[in-house]
Image 1 (cartoon, rainbow, N blue to C red):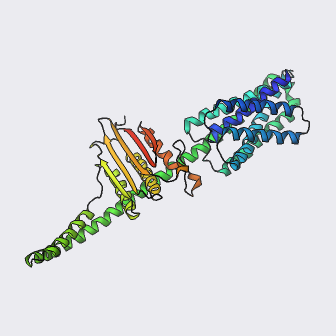
Image 2 (tube, rainbow, N blue to C red):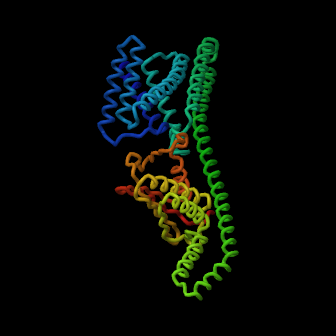
Length: 432
């Protein structure tokens, strides 16, 4: 019976590790394979039985860490370095959580004069698993990214905080048990459980606050980006206005010279000069107009940037006259998708980006596509970034997804041959 309880506790321990890897660290899972779970279960049971007969704790720890590493290799696609680091960190976190749970179960057992180490370990594993599951549910309500984007220094501080909590609880157990427990068992167990629950809630709050801080920082960055785009657009319009004034100032001279060429019968020179003036007039107008000022601003800036890189942007369609989507969401969606499209197109020989805008009575449909050359980075479930800003890896697409969700819309990423296409449907409804 004791061996069975220990094996079940160890299997639950492995499940805790896999939950942390999946919902907190957001490691990339390998393709669904039923054998993977069976292999994980078999390895967990075998290692549990081996460790139970090993007296040397150092050897047992090494075998345990190897087991965790092997299981993570079976389940996840990450590189070996990341697997090793995650295996060690997650093992430490889960082990401290289990020790906290064991303290709680042990104190309750002592106060109630019940002693069964096997069952206590099993109950402790269940308690830890429950805590990890509850926090993962709360975490998923905030973000789908888990703690993957939280800076490593904050994760290190969280680990130290968790260890400090364990030390506090262990010290409380050792110092107060004999003094208080047998004088007033009920009061003591209530106080002890309250303190333990308080520490667990503190840990959960730390995780959620770290993630919320990161999300808030990303929102601040996109707002700053939006404001910078507005400033650039105003500067762009101001420059265009100067060019228009200069052209208007010189137009009388141009017309006089055209008239002279015509009178002198210099038809070819007249035609060339006339075409130059037409080209100048075209340049002074907006390159793109889809019927929405914010989208026009972002599209025209992207158009100018693409033109400098010898990339062609083809725009088709129009926005409805009544657009109820916020300027913030429109800027976020178009700015990030166009930036990504231009950046990707700049690395391929097919230098073309296309934007299609359509609308129905209640929806706005947008398609932005480009050609792509790096197949290794094409993963529509988790787009990989080649940028150097690793701390904000992939946050542009996440902000696009958030803006689409805010509009009660849908986003679909389609990869066909060497084409990368993002299709977005937005609800064009007034906010109540």
